Image (cartoon, rainbow, N blue to C red):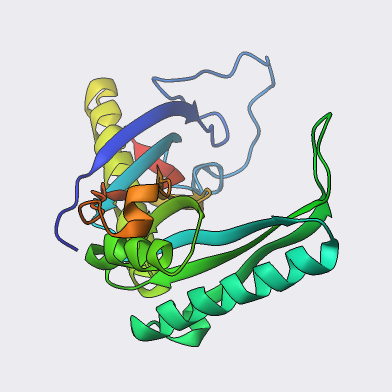
Length: 254
């Protein structure tokens, strides 16, 4: 990862737990119950006087190390068979281009394939579309892949999603959780100082959803690109972010 940035948001809860008839500066027992005759050691079974619950979030950013390019071919004709044949020929041309670029077969996934009656009031014949999802592990080659696909006959260039590999995603997930936990610790310490109590440790931790926020860029094929008259395609990728949330409960003593 080339860069990371930690961002935070948090919300805070504070509760006090009573043990027997022991008092706490943050809560009181007004139930009117009579004191019992149990030994003091039994009524003070817990050294902590209460709990502080904090909900916090953390976010990390990293440069994308993977991109998914959506490209395809379109065709129209008088019959469904003619469209099917045109789509097959166009798809073969794209597969050959991907192979020439050194893209592994497992990184080329079939996308949408449709052949349907032409639409429109005066439309006649049939239309069709055959698309592919191409995973590019070198994000600086995205423009090269798009240009090669267009030159090979692609007339349907959809979008590019910049994201991260599973390995990087796993690492960022841990970093995001660490950031959320750190923010929770800071908030709990601030509350404890403000209330003049001392944190005794963590009693519970719950993690929320961890989300990966990919960056999507819309693209389009042009006649100049298909004829080789356009400059090389360049697409700038922004950092990918991963966020996590946690809820942590801390025991405190006065």
